[in-house]
Image (spheres, rainbow, N blue to C red):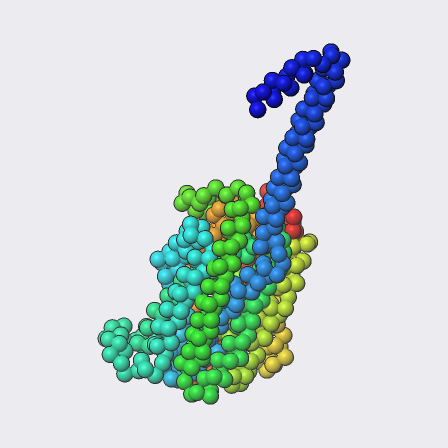
Length: 513
C-alpha cells in the first residue's frame, strides 16, 4: 500500500505545472461545493425549526376558552350548580302557611329561619375567608369545596323538618333552651347557616370562573345566561315544592328532592374541576405572564374605594328588596288575592321568567353597547314601583291581572340590575383580588339579606297582632319597607353614574374589547 502511494506521488511530481494548476482548481471547486452544501443544510434545519416553533406557539396559544363549545360547556356546568342551589334556597318559601300549620313556625320564627342562611357569612366573616380561599386556591378547588358544604348543610336542614326528627333525642335536647323557638327551626337554621356558607361561596366562585373563561369575550352575556339558568330554579321550585308537599302531605319531601339535585350539582363541579385544570395548564404553556399574587392588604383597598362601596351598597339595597321578598311573596299573594298556597306560588313562579328571558339579551347589549349604570337606574325605579303596587293598590282593585303584571315587571327589574351590576366589578378592581372583591360585595349583601327577613317577619307580626290565620295577614308595612330600599338604590345608581363619568371606570362602556 505504501509503495502504491509513493508511486502515485512520484507520478504526481512528474506531471507538468499546468496539470497541477488544473487539479488544484478542481479540488478547490469541490471543497467550496461541499461547504455550500453544508451551509444550505444548516440553513434548512434552522428555518425548519423556527417554522415548527411558530406553529407550535400558535397552537399552544389557542386555549380552551378560545373554543366556544368549551367555554360555554364550562358555563353550563357552573350554572347548573347554581340552578340546583337556588332551588334549595327557596324550597320552603312557597310553604310558609304549611310550616305554620305543621311545625308551628309563626312569621317571626320563619323570618329568623330565613335570615339564618346568612348568619355565618356575616358574623363569622365566612364570605371574606371564602374570597381569600378562592384567590389563593383557585376556582376549581373552591367550586368542589362549596358543593360539599352545600350538601352537608342541606342534609341537616332536611333532617330537621323530617318526620324522623320529631320525638328524637336531639329534638328533646334542643327544646330544653330558647323554648319560644321550636327545635325543628333551631336545627333547620343550623343547616341553613352551613348551606348558606356553601351557596354564597359558590356564587363568588362562579362569578370569578365566568370572568376566567369569558373575559374579553361575551362576559356580560355569559353572566346573564348563568343568572337566567339560576333563576329558572326559582321558577321550578315555586311550581314543584307545593305540589310535592301536597302529594306526600309533608314539607320534608320537596327538601329531600332538592338535596338529591345538590348531589348532581356536586358532580357538575367535579367535571368542571378537570376542565379548569386543563385550561390552567394551557395558560402556563402559552407563556402568559402570571398575575401578581394576592395579598391580604388588597382587601383594604376595597374598603377605601368609594366607587366599589357604591356598587356594594347598591347591591345590598337592591337584593334586600328581592330575595327576602321571595320568602314572603307566596303568602302575601295568598292574603291579597284570597287564593290557595299553590295558586299563589304559581303566580309568583313567573317572577324569574322575565329575568330569565331578558338577562342574557341585556348582557349581550352590555357587551356590545354598554350603558350599565343607566340600566341600574331603570331597574331600581321598576323595583320600587312594583313594591308600591303590592303595598298601596286597594284590595278591590288588586286583581290577578295586577298581580301578574307587577310580578313580571319586577322580573324585568331583576334582569336589568344584576345584568349590569356583576360585569361592572372587574372594571373597578384588579383581577388578582377579584375573588375577594366579589366576596366583600356578597358579605355586605348578606348583611341585608340576613337583617331584612327578620325585620319583615317582625313587622308582619307587630302589624297583625292577634291574627292566627296565616291567610289573614296585612302586608302593607312590609311592602313599603321594600319600596324604601328601591328609593335608596335609585340614589346610589345615580351616584355611580356620576362617578363613572368623572373617573372613567367604563361602567357605561361595552364589555367587548
